[in-house]
Length: 398
Image (cartoon, rainbow, N blue to C red; front, side, top):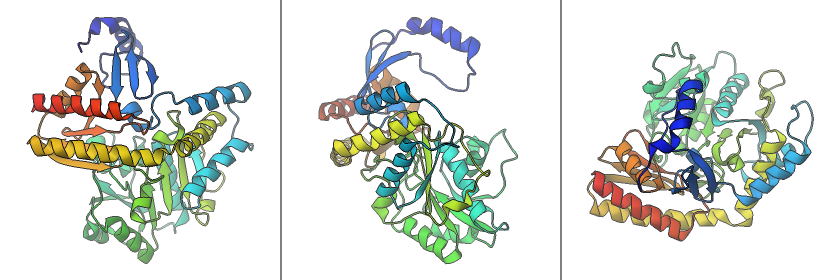
């Protein structure tokens, strides 16, 4: 499939004049989405295996979410959090019942949820304990606090001095974590599976060891489940695969079926530390996000989509392990649910570009990891089509 940049010349010129150029953009104007497909302004169709950078876990424009949002917009768009709304309470209850029985703070994004978590753990522990241990290869967002928590130097360049108090340990190395803990450490913050870092799975016993360490040292354990949460891994939350319950959990991306929304969940005995006046989000938990969040959870349950994740995950694992055995340029396949990473000995950006030309949308992270975050509503035939195109492209580029 060829792409004609001339079709988007006008809009590209408009962006160059009026939009801050902080994103690298493909020369395509997307105008419509349905399920695992999107269409551009020239009516070309693309199979999207990275929908919304992981936000569209239910695919593009899932009917129950669309209907809930339309109905809500007719009744109430926004009110501040100084008032009660039934939908926000119900949303919090549904999340609590599917997790560890905690209480929710609502915001608008993953980085906001992580900022709230940073404040909460510092507020909940003695003032002299302020250090938070995070991990190299991790990613927690792009606000200054979340960037400081992100253990990747490339995101720190040019914006220093960073917020103080973060210490970085290699992901998976318990002994390195132990050496960083001191009397000023209040928490450990970790992604159960590193997403942007390359779909890095925790080694056996690692998360369990962090829990034991936190309990022994009276520290809080924070799980950043912005990418892993809400069914992405085949459980409601990734921690449920490992039997390790965090004290604080952050959510966003697929939380609202594509609508902007974020949340922090924490144990009831910790929640009061985020007291009135210490943190807020004007649009957090607004009626539209709450309606979308409720519809998302209900759709996943009504259509038994957690089970579907398992079926799709097995298919992708089988196909990509078979491909890796036949293609020496794939050095590792890393999968948990519908978090999929292929480590390639090739130019990852070239793979992404060739896939685009063939009508397939995928992502490259860490330069050589082809990352897929497909929708849990993906059909068998769509999964097969995507695997076929990607296999062909990797063979060509390698």
